[in-house]
Length: 192
Image 1 (cartoon, rainbow, N blue to C red):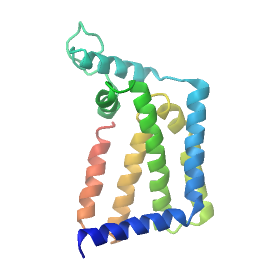
Image 2: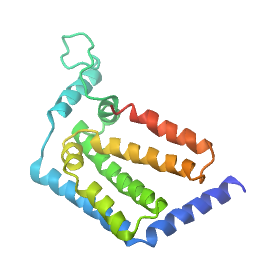
Image 3: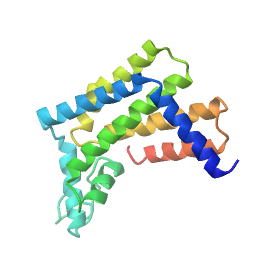
């Protein structure tokens, strides 16, 4: 098999798994809807984000990743990921908007990864619904993720690592998949 054949097979497998089960679409829509309503209704900003944003602004102004420009370069942010995303997109958009959009993207990935794990473990539709409902409605994911924290991104990376670990354990992936799993777990260190 060549790479093109493998990518076509993977693409078809991906499309068929999503298109045949509206449960995934329903919970992605619910999860995104709940988060967007929370964001628009509350406008909540977590104070850790404000500290992180100050470090990002100071870095772009040439003072380094520090909270106060007059102080030495001191670690003043919650986690590397919470500062890297706003730092990368700072010239384009506000750091808070970056984190909120990243949280929404990670929400889609989180629900999808949980769905794939449930399918791998042969959960019934009812059991899968409970798992997806928990991830869609969990207050801490919504509250922290939409308030500028990296919580939802962290959950996404964790579920991605779990999915690939299960594929290795079940023999669906060769050991090269283990490298994927280890990479996702090492990215998890960027979060906390």
